[in-house]
Amino acid sequence: MTSSPGHLITVEPGTAHVRVVRDGRVLAESRRPLVLRETGCPVRYYLPPGDVRTELLTASDTRTHCPFKGDASYWSLPDAADLVWAYPEPKPEVAAIKDHFCFYNTETVTD
Image 1 (tube, rainbow, N blue to C red):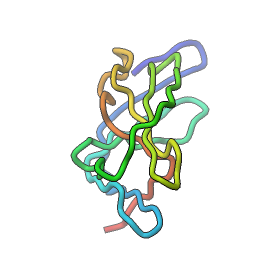
Image 2 (cartoon, rainbow, N blue to C red):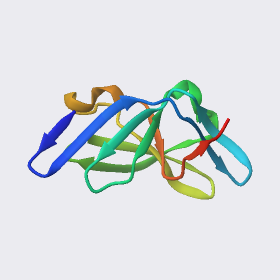
Image 3 (tube, one colour):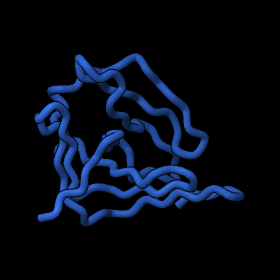
């Protein structure tokens, strides 16, 4: 957990079955996501690399900085720039998300 006045981030193991599908193709599916909750942001699922079809993704030159999480790197599909991101060297307070992938559109699957 990390926090500053008015800002809180928690990361915890999730139990949801989550999936990322684009144009009918499954890009990621996990039953062991990390759930990141951050003040003012939607809940995000960070997926282990083994649950992501990284062979379909191409590294992007895009980089962003979050004062709470660190510097993010991005990956794209041919028709979807910067679709997914990860923190290769996150801040110590959110170290659990290191190298986990986060997509903008992740669905929760009801088994």
